[in-house]
Image 1 (cartoon, helix red, strand yellow):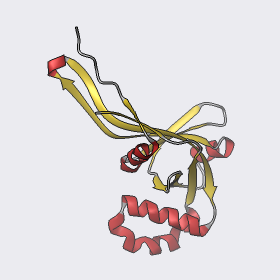
Image 2: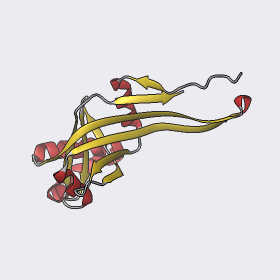
Image 3: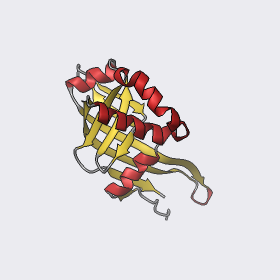
Length: 160
């Protein structure tokens, strides 16, 4: 009789949020105006329990998608370790993953835009925060910010 494989285990919302926080990028999936799927990895930052931000240009395919249908799906993997288990003659993968559903909308308020950009800088380039104010003065108007508000609790899975 073969040993039973360990199944992925469902994790709570707080654990899933940690996966998002640790992931180097989050895949954001949306729907194009013609109804076809569109997904891309983005650098997201989280604020609180249900808000994420990302920055981009003021035009492009994701902007067209979000103007048409603002519902998005987020997915992230913060750990992925392929493994061959010799004792079981089995190929497997250990992982931490999370998914969430939300609604994306543009941020127009300069105070909120600046706060979102500061959070992004703090997460991805903390050593350069000293240059932040100068960069904001130069590029805030050229930078679009989107807020994703989760519409249901995130779900996480792990295979230890």
